[in-house]
Image (cartoon, rainbow, N blue to C red; front, side, top):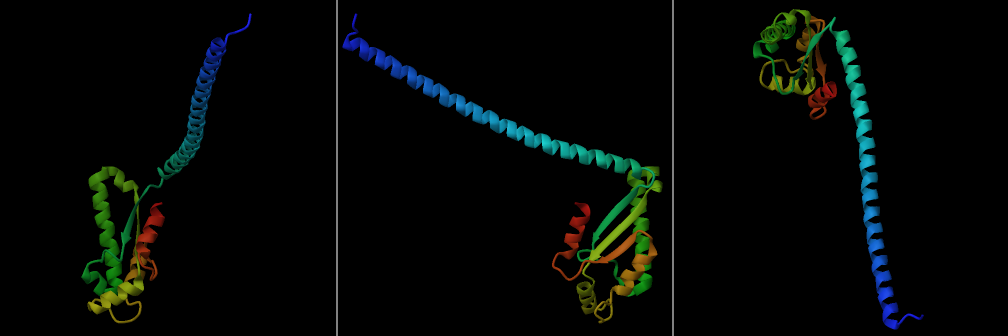
Amino acid sequence: MLLRDSDIDSLNNQLATLSNENQSHHNKLQLVLEQFRNVLEDYSSLKSDYEEVKEGREKYKKQARGQERNPFVLVLVDGDGYLFKEHFIKAGSDGGINAARELSDSVRELMHSTMGAEADRCRIMVRVYANILGLSKVLARNGMVGHEARSLSPFSSAFNRAQDLFDFVDAAEKKEGSDFKIRGTVD
């Protein structure tokens, strides 16, 4: 029994339809597989990031447990953006010592108001970052220090000596040097 031309055409059409549907199904399956691959890659990346964060958190917890015996409060000051009281700066070395003491007392008072008795266990660490040369020039123009190149140095040196964890750091003449140093300390 031979097939008629219309039967052959019908079978060809059915085969073409089936082939098109199969190709469409194949394309959809490939798309889903590609999306699944992307999800797996994203998952792997997130898992890696999570492991790093988890490791960092565990490291921080260990450090924090170690610091429970010797906790401290860190105060960072942009010395280019915040000036000490004029009478401290004009007093040179004595002003540096008195500024450090007043800052320490103020921070301790703030700590007591927020932490209560726990504040007594904490040490205070202060880092003041400033462009000493540039700040000296500005203060000299305002008549607060002499006209020497680093006329703020006696104040900053005495500030450093006044408290064991207090440092007045020269952030150099770089623009935004103090901000750079502060960000580096926090990061």
